[in-house]
Length: 549
Image (cartoon, rainbow, N blue to C red; front, side, top):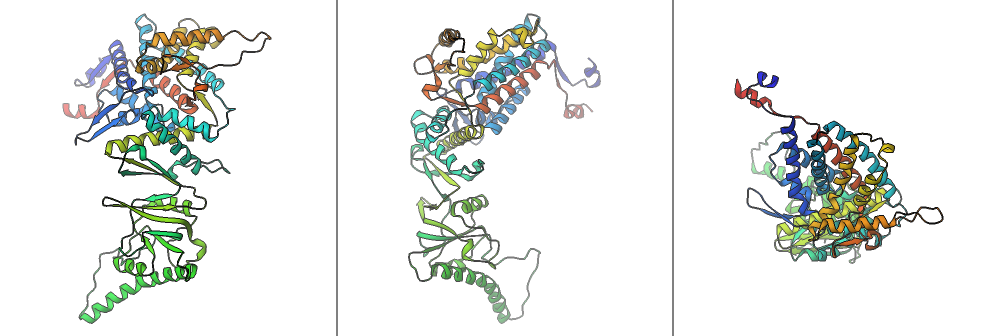
Protein backbone atom coordinates (compact mmCIF):
# COMPACT_ATOMS: atom_id res chain seq x y z
CA UNK A 1 0.00 0.00 0.00
CA UNK A 2 2.94 2.32 0.65
CA UNK A 3 3.52 2.62 -3.11
CA UNK A 4 -0.14 3.50 -3.67
CA UNK A 5 0.19 6.36 -1.16
CA UNK A 6 3.28 7.69 -2.95
CA UNK A 7 1.84 7.31 -6.43
CA UNK A 8 -1.91 6.64 -6.73
CA UNK A 9 -1.52 5.82 -10.46
CA UNK A 10 1.02 3.02 -9.90
CA UNK A 11 -0.11 -0.50 -10.78
CA UNK A 12 1.16 -3.31 -8.60
CA UNK A 13 0.70 -7.08 -8.49
CA UNK A 14 1.56 -8.77 -5.18
CA UNK A 15 2.78 -12.23 -4.22
CA UNK A 16 0.71 -14.94 -5.95
CA UNK A 17 -0.53 -12.65 -8.72
CA UNK A 18 3.01 -11.50 -9.60
CA UNK A 19 4.31 -15.07 -9.64
CA UNK A 20 1.35 -16.25 -11.73
CA UNK A 21 2.05 -13.47 -14.29
CA UNK A 22 5.72 -14.48 -14.51
CA UNK A 23 4.99 -18.19 -14.89
CA UNK A 24 2.21 -17.61 -17.45
CA UNK A 25 4.42 -15.26 -19.53
CA UNK A 26 7.30 -17.74 -19.55
CA UNK A 27 4.98 -20.61 -20.52
CA UNK A 28 3.43 -18.45 -23.25
CA UNK A 29 6.81 -17.66 -24.79
CA UNK A 30 7.80 -21.32 -24.49
CA UNK A 31 4.65 -22.47 -26.31
CA UNK A 32 5.43 -20.09 -29.21
CA UNK A 33 9.05 -21.18 -29.63
CA UNK A 34 9.03 -24.86 -28.65
CA UNK A 35 7.53 -25.97 -31.99
CA UNK A 36 10.73 -24.70 -33.71
CA UNK A 37 13.11 -26.92 -31.74
CA UNK A 38 15.09 -29.58 -33.55
CA UNK A 39 15.34 -30.80 -37.15
CA UNK A 40 11.62 -31.60 -37.29
CA UNK A 41 10.53 -28.20 -35.95
CA UNK A 42 8.06 -26.01 -37.82
CA UNK A 43 8.65 -22.63 -39.45
CA UNK A 44 7.28 -19.26 -38.36
CA UNK A 45 6.25 -16.51 -40.76
CA UNK A 46 7.05 -12.98 -39.61
CA UNK A 47 5.37 -10.07 -41.37
CA UNK A 48 6.67 -6.58 -40.53
CA UNK A 49 4.87 -3.23 -40.77
CA UNK A 50 5.94 -2.78 -44.39
CA UNK A 51 4.55 -6.19 -45.38
CA UNK A 52 7.96 -7.86 -45.79
CA UNK A 53 7.83 -11.60 -45.14
CA UNK A 54 10.44 -13.61 -43.28
CA UNK A 55 10.26 -17.40 -42.83
CA UNK A 56 12.44 -18.70 -40.02
CA UNK A 57 13.06 -21.45 -37.46
CA UNK A 58 15.84 -19.52 -35.75
CA UNK A 59 14.85 -18.59 -32.18
CA UNK A 60 17.13 -15.56 -32.12
CA UNK A 61 15.53 -14.06 -35.25
CA UNK A 62 12.05 -14.67 -33.82
CA UNK A 63 12.81 -13.14 -30.43
CA UNK A 64 14.49 -10.03 -31.85
CA UNK A 65 11.84 -9.38 -34.51
CA UNK A 66 8.63 -10.32 -32.65
CA UNK A 67 6.76 -7.55 -30.85
CA UNK A 68 6.54 -8.74 -27.23
CA UNK A 69 4.39 -6.81 -24.74
CA UNK A 70 4.83 -8.74 -21.46
CA UNK A 71 7.81 -7.43 -19.43
CA UNK A 72 8.60 -10.95 -18.18
CA UNK A 73 8.66 -12.33 -21.72
CA UNK A 74 10.87 -9.41 -22.83
CA UNK A 75 13.34 -10.26 -20.04
CA UNK A 76 13.51 -13.92 -21.12
CA UNK A 77 13.76 -12.96 -24.81
CA UNK A 78 16.72 -10.61 -24.16
CA UNK A 79 18.57 -13.21 -22.10
CA UNK A 80 17.98 -15.89 -24.76
CA UNK A 81 19.12 -13.51 -27.54
CA UNK A 82 22.28 -12.82 -25.49
CA UNK A 83 22.88 -16.59 -25.48
CA UNK A 84 22.98 -16.47 -29.29
CA UNK A 85 25.38 -13.49 -29.25
CA UNK A 86 27.81 -15.38 -26.99
CA UNK A 87 27.65 -18.92 -28.37
CA UNK A 88 25.76 -18.68 -31.68
CA UNK A 89 22.99 -21.15 -30.81
CA UNK A 90 20.70 -22.46 -28.06
CA UNK A 91 18.16 -19.61 -28.01
CA UNK A 92 15.06 -21.84 -28.22
CA UNK A 93 16.61 -24.24 -25.66
CA UNK A 94 16.96 -21.40 -23.10
CA UNK A 95 13.34 -20.29 -23.57
CA UNK A 96 12.07 -23.88 -23.21
CA UNK A 97 14.19 -24.50 -20.08
CA UNK A 98 13.07 -21.25 -18.39
CA UNK A 99 9.39 -22.00 -19.11
CA UNK A 100 9.66 -25.57 -17.83
CA UNK A 101 11.69 -24.66 -14.71
CA UNK A 102 8.99 -22.14 -13.73
CA UNK A 103 6.17 -24.59 -14.50
CA UNK A 104 7.71 -27.36 -12.35
CA UNK A 105 8.55 -24.92 -9.53
CA UNK A 106 5.02 -23.51 -9.54
CA UNK A 107 3.62 -27.00 -8.81
CA UNK A 108 5.58 -27.13 -5.55
CA UNK A 109 4.84 -23.48 -4.67
CA UNK A 110 1.10 -24.22 -4.89
CA UNK A 111 1.69 -27.02 -2.35
CA UNK A 112 3.17 -24.48 0.08
CA UNK A 113 6.94 -24.58 -0.62
CA UNK A 114 8.57 -21.14 -0.46
CA UNK A 115 10.19 -19.92 -3.76
CA UNK A 116 13.51 -19.23 -1.95
CA UNK A 117 13.80 -22.92 -0.98
CA UNK A 118 13.15 -23.99 -4.58
CA UNK A 119 15.77 -21.57 -5.96
CA UNK A 120 18.30 -22.95 -3.43
CA UNK A 121 17.52 -26.42 -4.82
CA UNK A 122 17.94 -25.06 -8.39
CA UNK A 123 21.41 -23.76 -7.50
CA UNK A 124 22.52 -27.12 -6.05
CA UNK A 125 21.12 -28.94 -9.12
CA UNK A 126 22.79 -26.45 -11.51
CA UNK A 127 26.23 -27.06 -10.00
CA UNK A 128 25.74 -30.83 -10.16
CA UNK A 129 24.46 -30.59 -13.76
CA UNK A 130 27.57 -28.63 -14.83
CA UNK A 131 29.84 -31.19 -13.13
CA UNK A 132 27.93 -33.91 -14.96
CA UNK A 133 28.36 -31.95 -18.22
CA UNK A 134 32.15 -31.83 -17.72
CA UNK A 135 32.17 -35.60 -17.24
CA UNK A 136 29.81 -36.10 -20.21
CA UNK A 137 31.84 -34.11 -22.74
CA UNK A 138 34.14 -35.93 -25.18
CA UNK A 139 37.66 -34.52 -25.47
CA UNK A 140 39.41 -37.52 -27.05
CA UNK A 141 37.77 -37.12 -30.47
CA UNK A 142 39.86 -36.31 -33.52
CA UNK A 143 38.65 -32.96 -34.88
CA UNK A 144 39.23 -33.77 -38.57
CA UNK A 145 37.12 -32.51 -41.48
CA UNK A 146 34.83 -35.55 -41.45
CA UNK A 147 33.96 -35.05 -37.77
CA UNK A 148 33.41 -31.31 -38.23
CA UNK A 149 31.02 -32.10 -41.11
CA UNK A 150 28.88 -34.08 -38.62
CA UNK A 151 28.91 -31.09 -36.22
CA UNK A 152 27.88 -28.72 -39.04
CA UNK A 153 25.08 -31.08 -40.15
CA UNK A 154 23.74 -31.32 -36.58
CA UNK A 155 23.50 -27.52 -36.36
CA UNK A 156 22.21 -26.83 -39.91
CA UNK A 157 19.57 -29.60 -39.80
CA UNK A 158 17.71 -27.61 -37.12
CA UNK A 159 17.53 -24.51 -39.37
CA UNK A 160 16.99 -25.70 -42.97
CA UNK A 161 15.71 -28.83 -44.76
CA UNK A 162 17.80 -32.00 -45.09
CA UNK A 163 18.63 -31.46 -48.78
CA UNK A 164 20.02 -27.97 -48.19
CA UNK A 165 21.87 -29.18 -45.07
CA UNK A 166 23.92 -31.56 -47.23
CA UNK A 167 24.88 -28.63 -49.52
CA UNK A 168 25.74 -26.17 -46.73
CA UNK A 169 27.60 -28.50 -44.31
CA UNK A 170 30.82 -28.88 -46.42
CA UNK A 171 30.72 -25.16 -47.33
CA UNK A 172 30.53 -24.08 -43.67
CA UNK A 173 33.20 -26.57 -42.55
CA UNK A 174 35.67 -25.60 -45.29
CA UNK A 175 35.12 -21.89 -44.55
CA UNK A 176 36.00 -22.29 -40.86
CA UNK A 177 39.04 -24.49 -41.61
CA UNK A 178 40.20 -21.94 -44.18
CA UNK A 179 40.26 -19.00 -41.74
CA UNK A 180 41.66 -20.98 -38.80
CA UNK A 181 45.26 -20.08 -37.97
CA UNK A 182 46.81 -23.49 -37.27
CA UNK A 183 49.94 -22.00 -35.65
CA UNK A 184 48.24 -19.79 -33.04
CA UNK A 185 44.87 -21.58 -32.99
CA UNK A 186 43.06 -18.25 -33.38
CA UNK A 187 39.83 -18.11 -35.36
CA UNK A 188 38.19 -14.94 -36.68
CA UNK A 189 34.83 -15.65 -38.32
CA UNK A 190 34.64 -12.02 -39.53
CA UNK A 191 37.15 -13.06 -42.18
CA UNK A 192 34.42 -15.18 -43.80
CA UNK A 193 32.54 -12.88 -46.16
CA UNK A 194 28.86 -13.87 -46.55
CA UNK A 195 27.68 -12.51 -49.90
CA UNK A 196 24.07 -12.69 -51.07
CA UNK A 197 23.14 -13.07 -54.73
CA UNK A 198 19.44 -13.01 -55.72
CA UNK A 199 19.86 -15.62 -58.40
CA UNK A 200 19.13 -19.40 -58.85
CA UNK A 201 18.16 -21.36 -55.67
CA UNK A 202 19.68 -21.86 -52.16
CA UNK A 203 21.05 -25.27 -53.29
CA UNK A 204 23.39 -23.40 -55.68
CA UNK A 205 25.17 -21.71 -52.74
CA UNK A 206 28.94 -22.00 -53.27
CA UNK A 207 32.20 -21.64 -51.35
CA UNK A 208 34.84 -19.41 -52.93
CA UNK A 209 38.40 -19.79 -51.65
CA UNK A 210 39.04 -16.11 -52.19
CA UNK A 211 36.98 -12.95 -52.11
CA UNK A 212 33.86 -11.83 -53.97
CA UNK A 213 33.34 -8.07 -54.21
CA UNK A 214 29.86 -6.73 -54.93
CA UNK A 215 30.95 -4.29 -57.65
CA UNK A 216 33.06 -4.31 -60.83
CA UNK A 217 35.19 -2.08 -63.03
CA UNK A 218 33.60 1.26 -63.88
CA UNK A 219 34.96 1.64 -67.42
CA UNK A 220 33.84 -0.29 -70.52
CA UNK A 221 37.40 -0.71 -71.86
CA UNK A 222 38.78 -2.30 -68.69
CA UNK A 223 39.56 -6.05 -68.86
CA UNK A 224 36.84 -8.29 -67.34
CA UNK A 225 39.25 -11.18 -66.71
CA UNK A 226 42.82 -10.85 -65.47
CA UNK A 227 45.19 -13.81 -65.01
CA UNK A 228 48.43 -13.80 -62.97
CA UNK A 229 47.46 -10.46 -61.49
CA UNK A 230 49.40 -8.15 -59.22
CA UNK A 231 46.92 -6.56 -56.80
CA UNK A 232 47.46 -3.05 -55.47
CA UNK A 233 45.29 -2.30 -52.42
CA UNK A 234 44.84 1.46 -51.97
CA UNK A 235 43.12 3.91 -49.68
CA UNK A 236 43.96 6.96 -51.81
CA UNK A 237 41.59 9.42 -53.44
CA UNK A 238 42.15 9.50 -57.21
CA UNK A 239 39.71 12.33 -57.83
CA UNK A 240 39.66 16.04 -57.17
CA UNK A 241 39.02 16.64 -53.46
CA UNK A 242 36.83 19.43 -52.20
CA UNK A 243 38.36 21.49 -49.39
CA UNK A 244 37.38 20.55 -45.85
CA UNK A 245 36.49 24.14 -44.97
CA UNK A 246 33.89 26.12 -46.89
CA UNK A 247 35.97 28.10 -49.38
CA UNK A 248 35.69 29.55 -52.88
CA UNK A 249 38.05 30.53 -55.73
CA UNK A 250 37.66 33.74 -57.69
CA UNK A 251 39.26 34.29 -61.08
CA UNK A 252 39.03 37.25 -63.40
CA UNK A 253 39.60 35.54 -66.75
CA UNK A 254 38.98 32.24 -68.55
CA UNK A 255 42.73 31.73 -68.69
CA UNK A 256 42.98 31.71 -64.89
CA UNK A 257 40.13 29.20 -64.69
CA UNK A 258 41.91 26.87 -67.15
CA UNK A 259 45.09 27.10 -65.07
CA UNK A 260 43.12 26.19 -61.93
CA UNK A 261 41.51 23.18 -63.64
CA UNK A 262 44.90 22.09 -65.02
CA UNK A 263 46.58 22.27 -61.59
CA UNK A 264 43.74 20.21 -60.08
CA UNK A 265 44.19 17.61 -62.82
CA UNK A 266 47.98 17.63 -62.41
CA UNK A 267 47.56 16.81 -58.72
CA UNK A 268 45.68 13.58 -59.57
CA UNK A 269 47.81 12.76 -62.64
CA UNK A 270 50.98 12.69 -60.54
CA UNK A 271 49.45 10.00 -58.33
CA UNK A 272 48.37 8.02 -61.41
CA UNK A 273 51.85 8.27 -62.93
CA UNK A 274 53.40 6.63 -59.86
CA UNK A 275 50.86 3.77 -60.04
CA UNK A 276 51.46 3.24 -63.77
CA UNK A 277 55.24 3.35 -63.26
CA UNK A 278 54.87 0.56 -60.67
CA UNK A 279 52.75 -1.46 -63.11
CA UNK A 280 55.39 -1.09 -65.84
CA UNK A 281 58.12 -2.06 -63.38
CA UNK A 282 56.51 -5.36 -62.33
CA UNK A 283 54.76 -6.34 -65.57
CA UNK A 284 57.19 -4.91 -68.12
CA UNK A 285 56.28 -6.03 -71.63
CA UNK A 286 54.75 -9.31 -70.43
CA UNK A 287 51.18 -9.36 -71.77
CA UNK A 288 50.25 -12.44 -69.69
CA UNK A 289 50.68 -10.58 -66.42
CA UNK A 290 47.81 -8.39 -65.22
CA UNK A 291 47.50 -5.48 -62.82
CA UNK A 292 44.47 -4.75 -60.63
CA UNK A 293 43.76 -1.81 -58.32
CA UNK A 294 41.22 -2.04 -55.50
CA UNK A 295 40.68 1.40 -54.00
CA UNK A 296 38.64 2.24 -50.90
CA UNK A 297 38.09 5.82 -52.11
CA UNK A 298 36.87 7.25 -55.41
CA UNK A 299 38.48 7.27 -58.88
CA UNK A 300 37.21 9.95 -61.28
CA UNK A 301 36.25 9.20 -64.95
CA UNK A 302 39.46 10.78 -66.36
CA UNK A 303 41.62 8.59 -64.11
CA UNK A 304 39.58 5.49 -65.03
CA UNK A 305 40.18 6.29 -68.71
CA UNK A 306 43.95 6.54 -68.20
CA UNK A 307 44.04 3.26 -66.23
CA UNK A 308 41.91 1.49 -68.90
CA UNK A 309 44.38 2.60 -71.61
CA UNK A 310 47.15 0.87 -69.64
CA UNK A 311 45.02 -2.31 -69.38
CA UNK A 312 44.55 -1.97 -65.61
CA UNK A 313 41.35 -3.17 -63.93
CA UNK A 314 40.40 -0.63 -61.24
CA UNK A 315 37.67 -1.05 -58.62
CA UNK A 316 36.64 1.98 -56.60
CA UNK A 317 34.79 2.50 -53.32
CA UNK A 318 35.49 -0.98 -51.96
CA UNK A 319 33.98 -1.68 -48.53
CA UNK A 320 36.31 -1.12 -45.61
CA UNK A 321 35.75 -4.63 -44.19
CA UNK A 322 36.78 -6.11 -47.54
CA UNK A 323 40.10 -4.24 -47.53
CA UNK A 324 41.32 -6.28 -44.56
CA UNK A 325 40.06 -9.51 -46.11
CA UNK A 326 41.72 -8.61 -49.42
CA UNK A 327 45.10 -8.34 -47.70
CA UNK A 328 44.65 -11.81 -46.17
CA UNK A 329 43.58 -13.28 -49.52
CA UNK A 330 46.24 -11.78 -51.80
CA UNK A 331 49.06 -11.22 -49.32
CA UNK A 332 49.38 -7.53 -50.26
CA UNK A 333 49.64 -4.49 -48.00
CA UNK A 334 47.10 -1.64 -48.04
CA UNK A 335 48.65 1.75 -48.88
CA UNK A 336 47.40 5.13 -47.65
CA UNK A 337 49.60 7.09 -50.06
CA UNK A 338 51.34 6.57 -53.42
CA UNK A 339 54.69 7.92 -52.21
CA UNK A 340 56.30 4.63 -51.17
CA UNK A 341 54.99 2.19 -53.78
CA UNK A 342 57.23 -0.83 -54.37
CA UNK A 343 56.74 -4.38 -55.74
CA UNK A 344 56.99 -5.75 -52.16
CA UNK A 345 53.60 -4.33 -51.15
CA UNK A 346 51.69 -5.92 -54.07
CA UNK A 347 49.42 -8.90 -53.57
CA UNK A 348 49.00 -11.78 -56.02
CA UNK A 349 45.93 -13.49 -57.45
CA UNK A 350 45.89 -16.23 -60.09
CA UNK A 351 42.55 -15.20 -61.59
CA UNK A 352 40.35 -12.13 -61.14
CA UNK A 353 37.15 -12.04 -63.18
CA UNK A 354 33.80 -10.26 -63.30
CA UNK A 355 30.32 -11.72 -63.44
CA UNK A 356 27.21 -9.69 -64.25
CA UNK A 357 23.80 -10.73 -62.91
CA UNK A 358 21.03 -8.39 -63.98
CA UNK A 359 22.28 -4.89 -63.31
CA UNK A 360 24.74 -5.96 -60.61
CA UNK A 361 28.41 -6.75 -61.13
CA UNK A 362 30.47 -9.09 -58.95
CA UNK A 363 34.26 -9.39 -58.99
CA UNK A 364 35.86 -12.71 -57.99
CA UNK A 365 39.42 -12.74 -56.59
CA UNK A 366 40.43 -16.43 -56.83
CA UNK A 367 43.33 -18.89 -57.27
CA UNK A 368 45.39 -17.27 -54.52
CA UNK A 369 48.54 -18.73 -52.97
CA UNK A 370 47.51 -19.07 -49.33
CA UNK A 371 44.23 -17.24 -48.67
CA UNK A 372 43.35 -16.65 -45.01
CA UNK A 373 39.92 -15.28 -45.90
CA UNK A 374 37.10 -16.73 -47.99
CA UNK A 375 33.57 -16.07 -49.24
CA UNK A 376 30.31 -17.99 -48.93
CA UNK A 377 28.15 -17.02 -51.89
CA UNK A 378 24.51 -17.48 -50.86
CA UNK A 379 22.04 -17.74 -53.73
CA UNK A 380 18.26 -17.72 -53.73
CA UNK A 381 15.35 -16.49 -55.82
CA UNK A 382 13.62 -14.50 -53.05
CA UNK A 383 14.76 -12.20 -50.28
CA UNK A 384 13.38 -14.37 -47.46
CA UNK A 385 15.06 -17.52 -48.89
CA UNK A 386 18.40 -15.68 -48.91
CA UNK A 387 17.86 -14.47 -45.35
CA UNK A 388 16.90 -17.92 -44.04
CA UNK A 389 20.00 -19.49 -45.63
CA UNK A 390 22.19 -16.67 -44.28
CA UNK A 391 20.93 -17.20 -40.71
CA UNK A 392 21.56 -20.95 -41.03
CA UNK A 393 25.10 -20.44 -42.41
CA UNK A 394 25.94 -18.02 -39.60
CA UNK A 395 24.82 -20.56 -36.95
CA UNK A 396 26.67 -23.37 -38.73
CA UNK A 397 29.91 -21.37 -38.78
CA UNK A 398 29.61 -20.68 -35.05
CA UNK A 399 28.87 -24.36 -34.27
CA UNK A 400 32.03 -25.58 -36.05
CA UNK A 401 34.12 -22.75 -34.57
CA UNK A 402 32.86 -23.56 -31.04
CA UNK A 403 34.04 -27.17 -31.34
CA UNK A 404 37.49 -26.06 -32.55
CA UNK A 405 37.76 -23.51 -29.70
CA UNK A 406 36.49 -25.88 -26.97
CA UNK A 407 38.35 -28.91 -28.39
CA UNK A 408 35.36 -30.85 -27.01
CA UNK A 409 31.85 -31.89 -27.99
CA UNK A 410 28.91 -33.49 -26.27
CA UNK A 411 26.66 -36.12 -27.88
CA UNK A 412 23.41 -34.57 -29.14
CA UNK A 413 19.84 -35.82 -29.70
CA UNK A 414 18.89 -34.68 -26.16
CA UNK A 415 21.19 -37.33 -24.63
CA UNK A 416 22.77 -35.01 -22.04
CA UNK A 417 19.39 -33.75 -20.78
CA UNK A 418 18.10 -37.34 -20.40
CA UNK A 419 21.34 -38.33 -18.63
CA UNK A 420 21.38 -35.39 -16.18
CA UNK A 421 17.68 -35.83 -15.31
CA UNK A 422 18.30 -39.51 -14.62
CA UNK A 423 21.44 -38.71 -12.59
CA UNK A 424 19.73 -36.05 -10.42
CA UNK A 425 16.63 -38.16 -9.73
CA UNK A 426 18.79 -41.09 -8.52
CA UNK A 427 21.49 -39.06 -6.75
CA UNK A 428 21.90 -39.05 -2.98
CA UNK A 429 20.32 -35.66 -2.16
CA UNK A 430 22.02 -35.38 1.23
CA UNK A 431 25.47 -35.75 -0.37
CA UNK A 432 24.59 -33.00 -2.83
CA UNK A 433 23.65 -30.75 0.08
CA UNK A 434 19.89 -30.76 -0.57
CA UNK A 435 18.15 -31.50 2.72
CA UNK A 436 14.51 -31.22 3.69
CA UNK A 437 12.32 -29.17 1.38
CA UNK A 438 15.32 -28.11 -0.76
CA UNK A 439 15.01 -31.51 -2.46
CA UNK A 440 11.89 -30.20 -4.20
CA UNK A 441 14.06 -27.68 -6.11
CA UNK A 442 16.40 -30.47 -7.31
CA UNK A 443 13.42 -32.63 -8.33
CA UNK A 444 11.84 -29.73 -10.23
CA UNK A 445 15.17 -29.06 -12.00
CA UNK A 446 15.57 -32.75 -12.97
CA UNK A 447 12.04 -32.88 -14.38
CA UNK A 448 12.53 -29.58 -16.28
CA UNK A 449 15.68 -30.89 -18.02
CA UNK A 450 13.51 -33.41 -19.87
CA UNK A 451 11.70 -30.62 -21.72
CA UNK A 452 14.34 -30.64 -24.50
CA UNK A 453 14.05 -34.35 -25.50
CA UNK A 454 10.27 -34.24 -24.93
CA UNK A 455 9.87 -31.26 -27.27
CA UNK A 456 12.15 -32.85 -29.90
CA UNK A 457 9.99 -36.00 -29.91
CA UNK A 458 6.71 -34.06 -29.84
CA UNK A 459 7.77 -31.98 -32.87
CA UNK A 460 8.50 -35.23 -34.75
CA UNK A 461 4.93 -36.48 -34.23
CA UNK A 462 5.69 -39.26 -31.72
CA UNK A 463 4.57 -39.75 -28.12
CA UNK A 464 7.16 -38.08 -25.83
CA UNK A 465 6.36 -40.19 -22.74
CA UNK A 466 6.62 -43.40 -24.73
CA UNK A 467 10.01 -42.55 -26.29
CA UNK A 468 11.48 -41.18 -23.03
CA UNK A 469 10.36 -44.35 -21.21
CA UNK A 470 12.36 -46.40 -23.78
CA UNK A 471 15.42 -44.18 -23.23
CA UNK A 472 15.03 -44.51 -19.45
CA UNK A 473 14.83 -48.32 -19.74
CA UNK A 474 17.98 -48.37 -21.84
CA UNK A 475 19.82 -46.20 -19.29
CA UNK A 476 18.68 -48.49 -16.45
CA UNK A 477 19.93 -51.57 -18.35
CA UNK A 478 23.41 -50.00 -18.59
CA UNK A 479 23.73 -49.07 -14.91
CA UNK A 480 25.40 -52.21 -13.45
CA UNK A 481 29.21 -52.03 -13.31
CA UNK A 482 31.42 -54.49 -15.10
CA UNK A 483 32.08 -57.81 -13.32
CA UNK A 484 35.76 -57.16 -12.55
CA UNK A 485 34.85 -54.09 -10.47
CA UNK A 486 35.63 -51.48 -13.14
CA UNK A 487 32.97 -49.03 -14.25
CA UNK A 488 30.99 -50.13 -17.28
CA UNK A 489 31.93 -48.27 -20.48
CA UNK A 490 29.80 -45.14 -20.86
CA UNK A 491 27.03 -45.28 -23.41
CA UNK A 492 24.96 -42.39 -24.64
CA UNK A 493 21.19 -42.53 -25.11
CA UNK A 494 19.39 -39.93 -27.22
CA UNK A 495 16.09 -39.79 -29.10
CA UNK A 496 15.78 -40.99 -32.71
CA UNK A 497 13.34 -38.59 -34.37
CA UNK A 498 12.90 -40.67 -37.53
CA UNK A 499 11.44 -43.81 -35.94
CA UNK A 500 10.47 -42.56 -32.47
CA UNK A 501 12.94 -44.73 -30.55
CA UNK A 502 16.15 -44.38 -28.55
CA UNK A 503 19.50 -44.13 -30.35
CA UNK A 504 23.21 -43.63 -29.69
CA UNK A 505 24.06 -40.13 -30.99
CA UNK A 506 27.80 -40.92 -31.21
CA UNK A 507 27.00 -43.60 -33.81
CA UNK A 508 24.40 -41.46 -35.63
CA UNK A 509 26.85 -38.52 -35.77
CA UNK A 510 24.68 -36.03 -33.84
CA UNK A 511 26.71 -33.56 -31.78
CA UNK A 512 26.03 -30.54 -29.59
CA UNK A 513 28.39 -27.73 -28.69
CA UNK A 514 29.72 -27.91 -25.12
CA UNK A 515 29.61 -24.15 -24.55
CA UNK A 516 26.05 -23.82 -25.90
CA UNK A 517 24.65 -26.35 -23.40
CA UNK A 518 26.77 -24.96 -20.54
CA UNK A 519 25.56 -21.39 -21.14
CA UNK A 520 21.95 -22.53 -21.67
CA UNK A 521 21.84 -24.27 -18.26
CA UNK A 522 23.56 -21.36 -16.49
CA UNK A 523 21.40 -18.71 -18.21
CA UNK A 524 18.06 -20.52 -17.85
CA UNK A 525 18.59 -21.30 -14.14
CA UNK A 526 19.58 -17.69 -13.39
CA UNK A 527 16.53 -16.19 -15.12
CA UNK A 528 14.10 -18.76 -13.65
CA UNK A 529 15.44 -18.14 -10.11
CA UNK A 530 15.11 -14.36 -10.48
CA UNK A 531 11.54 -14.64 -11.76
CA UNK A 532 10.53 -17.01 -8.94
CA UNK A 533 11.87 -14.60 -6.33
CA UNK A 534 9.98 -11.67 -7.87
CA UNK A 535 7.00 -11.15 -5.54
CA UNK A 536 5.79 -7.76 -6.76
CA UNK A 537 5.34 -6.30 -10.22
CA UNK A 538 5.29 -2.49 -10.29
CA UNK A 539 4.35 -0.42 -13.27
CA UNK A 540 5.33 2.96 -11.79
CA UNK A 541 7.94 4.55 -14.02
CA UNK A 542 8.70 8.28 -14.13
CA UNK A 543 6.32 8.82 -17.06
CA UNK A 544 3.37 7.70 -14.88
CA UNK A 545 4.39 10.17 -12.16
CA UNK A 546 4.58 13.04 -14.64
CA UNK A 547 1.09 12.33 -15.96
CA UNK A 548 -0.34 12.63 -12.44
CA UNK A 549 1.17 16.10 -11.81
